[in-house]
Image (cartoon, rainbow, N blue to C red; front, top):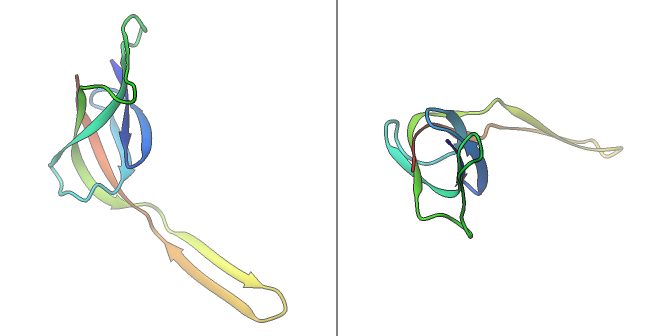
Length: 102
């Protein structure tokens, strides 16, 4: 069984026991999250449910870790005026294991 869920304004194709990284959820490790389900289907495609815009059922996942991505260096430069700026950024993310698709 596969599903398309929405988390943090983005859509993910997931299956049970799959681990995904989403934008920061703001919860502690071990907490169960519920996601809006947009589509549920079998791998063979025999049964297919499409929500308009979402289904009544919810997908659930358990938070495994709250981490950050690798550092991205942002540089600004203007020619001939000695303007140079460097900044770094690390996006927060949450690793979730999908536990239930119903």
